[in-house]
Structures are given as structure tokens and as C-alpha cells.
Amino acid sequence: MTDALHTLLTILDLLGLLMLGLYFLQMLLAATLPRPRRLYAPDEALNFTFVVPALNEEAVIEATVRNLREVAPDARIAVIDDGSDDRTAQIVERLAAGDARVTLLRRRLPEARQGKGKAMNWAVSQVLRDLRAAGADLQKEVFVVIDADGRVTPGLLLEARRVMAHSDVVAAQARVRIRQSPGRLSLKNAVGRMLEQQQDMEFFITRHIQLMRSWWHSAALCGNGQFMRASYVASMFGAGQTPWPDVLLEDFGSAAEARLVSPRHRLVFLEAAVTQQGLPDLRRFSRQRARWTQGTMQCLPYLAHLWRRPVPLLARLDLSYFILGPWLSGIIVLSFLTQPLRWGMGAQGLVLDAQVSLIITVINVIIQLQWVARYQHENNLSLGRTAFTLGSLPVYGFALFLSLPMAYKHYFTGRLTWDKSQRHIEPGHAEPGEGQAGELLTVGRGSD
Image (tube, rainbow, N blue to C red):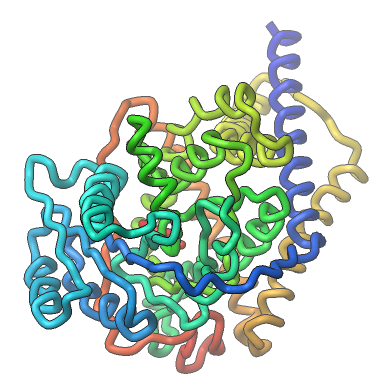
């Protein structure tokens, strides 16, 4: 019994070391690879249609539509009301009455509230019908998915015109930044501000990972700020497939689908940003990440397809690592849960030399510190704000740890319903990354 337990714990610890090694490799590549060069002239013939999924978004939807009209006055805006109980539809109807380029696409129960993927597929099929009726060249039409609290920065569409000038680019993902709540830091809101700060830094790290992925043309799609070429979307419908699959992480699923359809397809990353609200509540944040984790677990069937289809090797490895992420992370949870068993039975798994353990710890600390240093440099953070960012790392890690068991429970019990992320009215907001802890905060994930 003891020998069998020792063998099991050793295998568990070896898998944990493997996962840690893969994580170190990803961070090393993300931190050191240079940016890919893009030399294409902007395609001025591209037309953009913003698609905005909305469910009970009366607090933010008007500001979002007005931002899109200001940044892209020639673009169309299609807001999908997915069975809202509040005034979302009425607000959009009022805006549409005075602006022919704003359209309300309204879903009603029982069809409504069946998931973001189904809402997106339904709405985009309606827009495609109108584009075809108008004789539009679908190769020159681009859908842009924006969350109901999303804000587009002025340079985003110009960058999109440059990268999508290449005909093989079927999708692109903008950088995401978090608008942090204004007001003074206090004991009451400290945890929330820490979470908001870490969400913006998380997307900062994601930016570097996405730039790494751009080398093999497989940027992940994150929902908010997702660009999809209309001709590709139409071809998916024509083949009897849905561009946004019916999983909780439909944005990543749409990227996997695009990569599987053809080895020529490119998915690129855009440095210009979309911004969104953060989640300043520990419970809501953990539940959001649990939903994302469960959505990734639902994408496990893509793994077999990735290794059967002609997908570039580096893209295949990267996507496989992402899909297996929740399962590999479970090894850490399992290792933690087995500690009482190890103590009680006097059983050990893999015993590392003290120096090896120290080296692993130092490497991990260096990785975190260099990301904080880069984030500080980009945002010109004060010393106090930098210390606040460092101090919030344990809070963020604890929130992620809470989300894992929740995701496993929902996945294995087949539960697919989650509370949607709640928005809040922004009387004023701060820009991402600015400010100083303890002072008036002038600082500020993808999608819900």
C-alpha cells in the first residue's frame, strides 16, 4: 500500500514539475521574443460592423454605442438584446431612431439567453443577410465583437486595416485593458482595487503571450475586441458549421475553429486596445474565472482535431497547452489536497534537493518581478503604486485558486448556467495603469 501510494505521489509530483517547466518556457518566450513586423498598407476598402451582445446592460450600453460612433462614424453597430429585463432595448431603440447605422437585434424567450455563442451566430446571420442583399463584398466586410462595456481606442481600426490587408488573415484580437474605478483607496475597497489592478496586469502579460503567438499566426480570440472577416463567417455557415461554438468559452472556440478550417488561415494580435470594466468583487471575479476555466475544459474535443488536421506545429503545441491548462492546473490542486494524506501516512512523492527547490522558487519570483517591472515601465507607475501592484499578487492568486474547484464541480455535474458579469455606471473612470496607492486613484478581463 505504501509503495503504491509513493508511486502515485511521485507521478503526481513529476506531472506538476512538467507543468511548471512548460509555464516557465511560455513565460521565457513571451518575455524575450521580439514583435513580429507588419509591413502591409492599410486596406481602406474594409468596412466594419460592430456586434455588441447585451443582456441587462442599461448601465453601460449607451456610452458604448456613443464611443463606437465617435471612433468609427462610418461603421455599423448591431446591438444584440438577448432577452433583457431592464431598459437595454429601449435605450438602443432610442439611439437607432436617430442614427441609421445603429441597429437593434432583439431575441426573445425561449430563444434568448441560450448563451453568447448562439446569440452571436443568430445575429451575425441576420447581418450577413442584409450585407448580401446590399451586394457587399464579404471579403471586405469585418465583424468586430465588442462587450457592452467596451470602449475602442482611436488607433484600433487603422491597425486592423493594416493586418487584415493580408487576405489570409481571417480573424484578429485587440489588446484588452481594464478601466479601474475612480476614488480614494480605503480598507473597504482595497481588495476590489487589487483585483482590478491585477486584471489589467494579467492582460498586460497576455499581450506579450499574444505577440509570441503572432509568430505562428495563432493569436487567441478573447471576445471583447474580436475581429472576424465576414467571408470566413459566411463560409462557416455555408458548410453547416457555426463560427462561434456552443461552449462557455465561445471566443477561444471560434479561434480553434478558424485554425482548423485551413492551415493558411492567420489569426493576428492588435496592439491597439479596447478597454472594459474590471471586476472589483472577489466572489464575482472567482466565478468569472471559473466560468472561463469550465469553458476551456469544454474545448477538450478540439485536442484530437488539432493533431489530425494540418495545423502548423507551433500553433498545435500552443493550442494544446492552452486546452490542457485547466487539467494540468488540477494537478496543483490535487497535490495540495494530498498533503494531509502525506503527513498522516508518512508517505512522500518526489523529494527534491533543497537547492533545486530554491532554484525553482527563485525562477518563479523573477518571472513575477520582471512582469511587474515591465508593467511599471509601460504605465510609469509611482513607487507606491508599484508596491500596491506587488502586494495585490497574493489576492489575485487566491482568487484564481478559488475558481478551480468551482470550475471542476460545474464541469463534472454538467451545470452550464452562471451569473453574468454585472456592470456598473461610470460617472468617471480612470485610465488603465495610472495612479498611486493611497491617493486619489486615477487608474483604471476579454469578455464576460
